[in-house]
Amino acid sequence: MERKKLQLLLEVAILGAISFVLDQIGFKMPQGGSVTLSMLPIVIMAFRWGIMGGMLTGFVSGVLQLLMGGFVLNPIQAALDYFVAYTLVGVAGVTLAWLLSSKAKGNKGSMVTAIVIGTVIGGFLRYLIHFIGGIVFFASYAPEGQPVWLYSLLYNASYMIPAIILAAIVTSLLFTTAPRLLERK
Image (tube, rainbow, N blue to C red):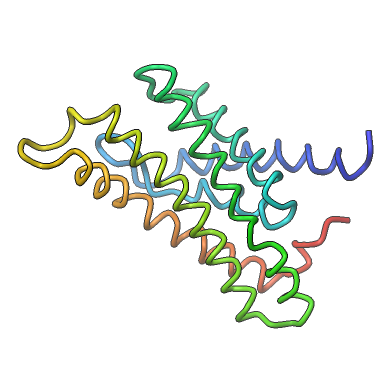
């Protein structure tokens, strides 16, 4: 197997497992969801290997979360909440070219902007999937008289927005203080 491909697969496995572990640490919400750094390893891989590296890492993380005690109502809900939601975090890599260009120029401000925008995009896609799942599968949790869409929007925002902000801050600190981590040798 080609050395770069082996390195990618090893990093996907290791960072996917770290994402799973980080998902176990954090503030758990009463009805599911939690504020954690689980997106951090996925975003790191998206900025090291691009969208596919990030998406593979997200998929591994989602599979591990599902297998190790995920909440399942039916196969479609499980696929959305675990496979699709975490895989889409890897789309953060959409700003990789911008990040690498900023790194080459030594422009840390532009690096941070690329990281934050990429992380917000990946995090928003995960949030969108959880929002849709909340409307379709968890409508019974909505308080009496409150529209289900509003309940899902607010409930998922309560943990997703802080998680996105945390991932963006830590990733920005990591790559601006140690930009060599973006290099694949």
